[in-house]
Image (cartoon, rainbow, N blue to C red; front, side, top):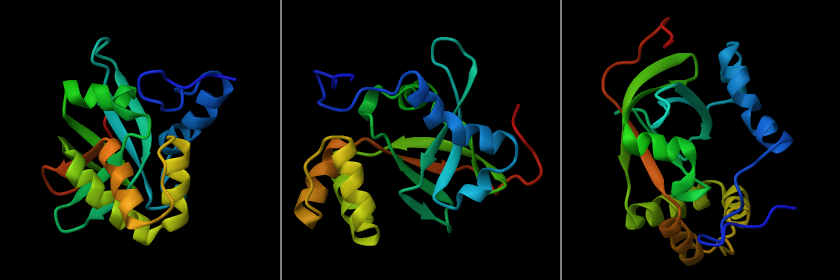
Length: 172
């Protein structure tokens, strides 16, 4: 069994077969079946900050603003998640939501924004919010106060669309 990260108390990043299982949704998006996973997931295309190579991560959509459009995602592994670190280095990227690709810019939200987002998310999806907090080892009993406290500790990113969605095009 892997130990938790001594600095953050967060669970260790997945390795071995757990990493492969966590990456399975990326393969579904690549073969065109990603939208079957529902509107709660998106495929983030990002560039490795060291390698410069294209990378992909499937993330849960915590909030979606259709008018903007903008998507809010959370880094459950904290600021050490590779996709998060890569976006910090290069915030302009592309995401796939449903069958469409969108050029976006990442905006990193502060702890108070995270508190409000987590409280609202917990009101919409109480069981999922409690499970997320348990997974990332943040105490939360489902109350607004505990969810706000947990939300302050989770890095949230708002992916803001730069233009109308691209249809029928795919990034390389």
